[in-house]
Image (cartoon, each protein chain N blue to C red):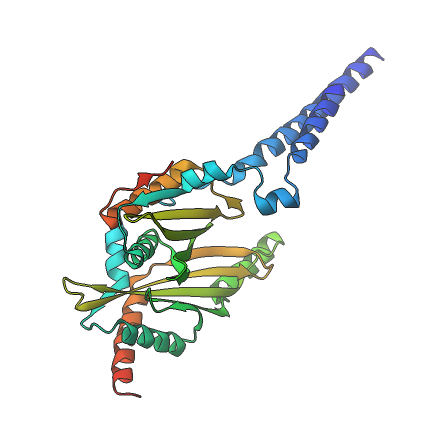
Length: 138
Length: 190
């Protein structure tokens, strides 16, 4: 009987780990610096429009339908449906005189994607379309 | 008497084991459900074929004209435009339609008769499309149009039953046939 009780307590305490609304709203458990480094790459290109168009083409190659884009702000949002829902926003902004910074963030069903490998594969796909190397930004 | 206690002990142990098994499966099932597939953002081997099916080139330098023909065509097909950005050559649109399928309902009825439990059937779907234009060719003498469709199907219990890309080549064939017509019609100012 005692063992059952122990298991019950363990089981219930596994629910306690669930995040509060504030934590879910602001993703408070992630480090801003770390998430940016995972999600950002620099490309040796200065043409913002070309970069954005290439991002759009890459997303289409990856099976996304583009939801919206804004050249002035340099943003693209897209959704992939494949028995799951993967939503992505990519932003492009200049870095100094010679580079563009490309940042992507993704949401898989109801969870943020924080796995570096996933972003690595995205930038690997983007590299091929850009004919340029994606440089890690520190 | 002794036999009776042993029997009770055995029963209790059996019950505990059952509870334990239930809890264990619960604990295992809870966290494991949501991880992103490894290949979600890698280019699949079918990329080239897909791109070819979904793309058509038009010999013109007027990207906006093609984009506006696409907007007209999406209206022809009953879509409402959600977003557009002419500087990047993008239009996205969506529509809601019925997803009722006679065959599925028949199957569900048959199951209900056989098992007493009716399986949910599809009710409606949101269909989404994005059209992207892009100047191509050495001197940008062509405009490439790439279109992609997807849909989310909801069943009669308001659960998402399907969410998928629509990849049937004949969909794209018909779209581009209609687009050529739309470009022609708009050139004639009809």
